Amino acid sequence: MVKQRNRRNPVCVQLNREINDKAKKKLTDYLEIGAKHLIEERTPLDMSFVFQLQNVLKNKPELFYKKRVPQPSKEISMNEKIIPQIDNDIEGTEMSFGFQSAIDVATRTIDEIHTT
Image 1 (cartoon, rainbow, N blue to C red):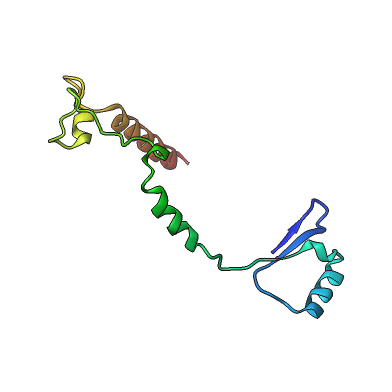
Image 2 (cartoon, rainbow, N blue to C red):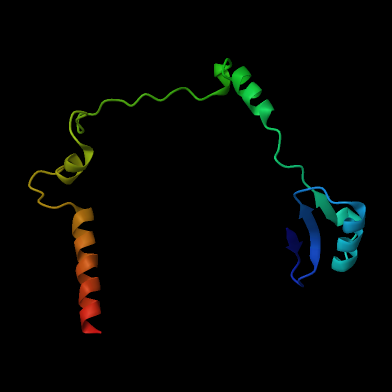
């Protein structure tokens, strides 16, 4: 991967594998960059320490947020689906705002297509 400046001059080159010294020299000469701008990455990274860290941290609850338990609500029943409850949250409402605005957008779009 070649990172570039505004003038399209390479700033550094990252290699994802090892190359020999002759190839490095050829590449740096061709790109007109110094050897310090040629970066070799070691991939794939050894991430085994993450699992060990995870096991250690699991036993330190003070490092984590407390679990949030949803509180029951008088307005929303946990035994019914949520969307119908939102649509019917005000007595006498036949359609919800979201539904009506979606219908308006669709109707306006269809009208614009027919008039052009």
